[in-house]
Image (cartoon, rainbow, N blue to C red; front, side, top):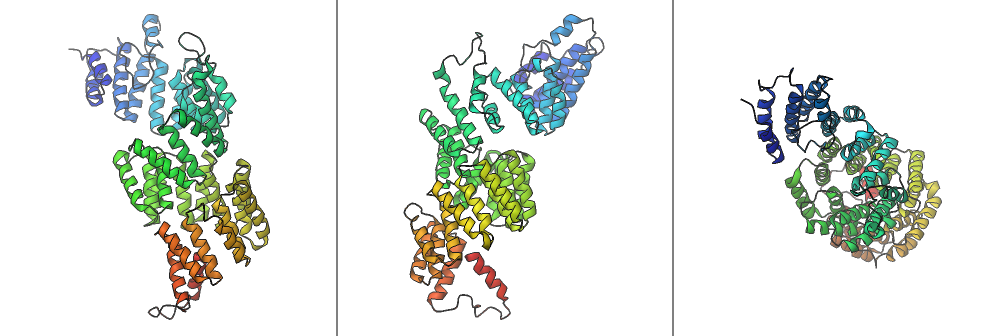
Length: 560
């Protein structure tokens, strides 16, 4: 009595993979199919079982089953050309998600094996299988997997060739567009591939320019972002958003870029728009979590993390968001979540950035350098450069810090933040303050509203005793910035000049904006002692007399 093969195909098509797998085990063990006399039938049966295992995510078993099928395929008599040619037909999908009981194809089976290896993170093994498929026999799915494997292996030239082939076959492979942009291709080069894409009638798909204009704008936007022209990229995305209002993908791309360049309020607005449209979106939500933490909005952060866990706890974004949440409570636990993210997906940049920031906070700058370098190998990100520079400075490696800052400036020549980073390195040494001042001023000329450079320049003025210059500079930003760090810095400047009432006003303003600002809390506590005529550095009455003076100096340094 035969097991109905067509019923297994029906189960697979209807997503009943567990039943298909069980029925498949009966099929491959059936005594009615003689492996010696009917190897092609045995191979077909094994492929069906392999497809069921793949869909159940039993990848190791699927690989074993597919390889058994290939062994039977190879023993099909050579003279049986009709049977063998039918098994090599190429008119069906190669995806393990599609099912066809009429024939199999050796190249398709190799692709399925490679897909299993890829799912297991076994890049080398996957490449071995894919390189066994002739280039002319590769379809779109195969070309895309090949491109990803080459990129993960850092064979960028081969990856570019495969991504280009994807766009020749279909111009709407968005991940190929993004990857080519990140690998250094120009917008003109990418768009030129579209005209080489034939449609079903054999004509190029982009004969009508207007129909593809939005896609060309999208390519230009991604190339701007990849080349660190964030302003140009945001302008192009904004143009696309007018044509496609409430487009989740564009809103997410804009929010991600805004987070990178420090436009935190704008990024938060766009992330919240996305969650209002679709509360189940996971993409870039770890970036949103980082922004909420910076704003000390722990209520929203808690809800976000709870939502993400309930949607899919296995995603790398969840690990980063948990790391962000735990940072305030337990840095060790936070670090373990950041490391978990990079194990889940070794190309997830926020995981490396979070790990680096935590290691830096835990006074492990050498390990932080390694984490930030890992992020930079994947993409030149301003935050990675900032972390790298500060890690080198924490290790007293000023030359390496200066080299990294200049590397950032070279990668982002129009970035005020990169200029400020070079200034930070010079400011770390008293002999370099004049150079630092020039870089901070250049950053402000390039981006007059850049608060970070203004705060750094004000700090430089204070360190050289120019408190009035510092206060004058910071006051200019009060009109446009409701920022707690700005008010804290002003309060510190006024406290240093004994303008205690003005200092009090700004500490209170900082706490209204961000009640969790520790510098404002400590500064206000210190100020209240000064206003009562009590020495703020004197130990409390109930404290032990053996208080180490060095501890007071460290606390004061942290406040200032």
